[in-house]
Amino acid sequence: MRIGLQEAYDRIGIEHSYDHQEKAWDAVHKNQNVILAAGTGSGKTEAVLVPALAKNLRVILVYPTKALLQDQVPRVQELWEKIHEKPATGHVSIDTGDDNDETLFRGDVILTTIDKLLYRVFGYGSARWGYIYPWRIAQSSQKKTLLVFDEAHAYDEVSLTHFLFLIDRLTYEKGIQTAILSATLPQALVEHLQDTPGKSFPRASGEGEFFQLISEKAGEVKRGQVRYGGHLENPSEVMQKASDAYKRGQQVIIIVNSVYPPKEEEPTSSEEAQGFSVKELWEALRDELGDRALEDLILYHGHQSPGQRREFLKKLQERDASRRDAPKPYILVTTSAFELGVNVSCDLMLTEVCSPDAFAQRIGRCARRSKRRDDGTEEPEQGEVYTFGDVSPKVSPGEKEAQHKLMDLLQHYKGKTLDADVKAQINAFNIFDTALLARRRNTVIYTVDASLYDYVYGFVATGAEVWRKGVLVTRDWVPTLEIQPDGEDPKERLRLSASYSVPRELVKGWWFETRDIDGRAIRIHGKDVLGQLEACGVSTQQKAVNAYQATLVVWLKPEAWDNVFGLKERKRSDPAKGNIPCPPEMRAVFVKPLPDAPALFWFEPEEEV
Image 1: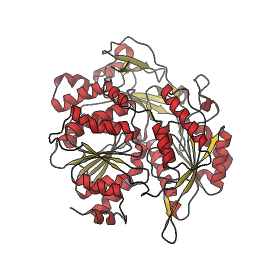
Image 2: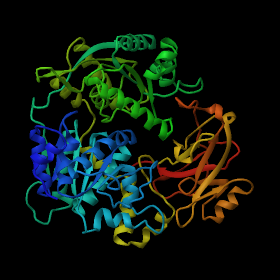
Image 3: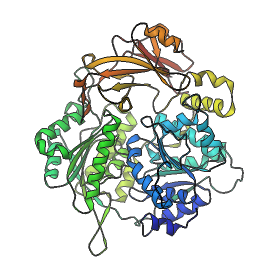
Image 4: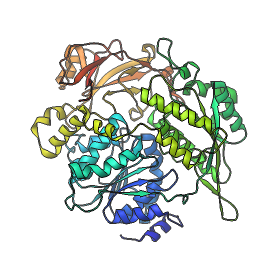
């Protein structure tokens, strides 16, 4: 099936395509790699997905978070159905840690995260089917692939290293056509991506730039207007602003940096000490507004089950759909897990002090669009944003300086519109340069990625041992433990960093899970746990379990879980010391999430090399 640009956009119900969409159409059809730098609400997804579907490419859409992925699923399915003029069943698949892809990457469109893509590139999965993924991603000639990294500016540290590695190997080396999308992509990253192939991965043809940079035409996309209202000093002001706006029928989003209030024994930043947490603000709003407003209070954070997060996103999208005709008020209390690219707009945004990049992303969810008047003309939405809290002492000195610069700039624009010039000044505060990118390629993380890649694609036998042991670094070196609420489907488990747990009095039981050769789960519990794990090939040195080979599952009592809030309480596990031998430049980390279970251990870089 081959259709032209205008017919394709007619099918998806867009009367007029933007200049950057037309340029992206030509680039995709000419097999060019694209960096698409366009603002929120400019149709970046349509710009690359529509021509790819029209050309019958396999599209791998890579997102930095599961929240953004889940938000995009209905949109992608609708585009597929309209372009092909038939249902999308079996052609759009999801591959995350929550929903395992059963199509083995046969789908026309695969939505995944950068962590899971890395997992598949290295052939991880059941022993029977593991290598089918690398073959379909990078080696199959039966169907060409377009690799799309959305919200690419969101990658930092470990995830940035993986992003650079995947670009090096899949785009530059394997020649997979790639599109990189972002509203705020740092100039240093653009220049780095365009310059790197000439140094390390020269093109066979030697013609043209490796990535074509496509930018949004100034003033073409009509958006709403956001005014900076000022800074709020305490939680009561935040709550009052939100409840007043809600009572006026407005839609409100509050973004907080922490889910729980700090424990007495934990170090606190000034904003945490004042009560800026999702739990405290949500409970205060619930008490203030009463039972009648419970349906209009929406929560979204990383300590809810996958099903809870999907349900709240669905509710939020339904409220957002009402904005055009009869807006239904709501208050969303959320964290940074939500800020990336979720396609909603609000009237009032209340955000805790954060990095300049995060701030730019957050306000992109306020007055995001324009409204069509009765006479057919466009009227921009009007929105207001307030900040609250203070710069956290936990961030790096450079990040602290960037946040202070942001707050100084915002105070200068109090009561004024945050236009494109102001947003450009905000983006200039971000800490991102070519030296950072060079350092990320010179880390243990990149070295591990390279050795695993060589084993899978180059059949280098020296990597076999690390591959079989499952030493795979994704967004973080720290493995996860899984929280199983009593009575819930195991697919709805909450995954937490292994350095966190829940209070002992809330735990109903625990077990370790490992996998057999066919990928089936084996549950280890009862007597002689260590002996059973060793029989399954799991290292259990010094009565500790290698957390990359076995997962600790914590089974909660009913009182530990709330069907709205999620995990009621969480605590940090202090690392314990041990003497397990480590590879060079690595260190062994021990934690004991449960007092009566064997400790968990894993290796992580002691420092960058």
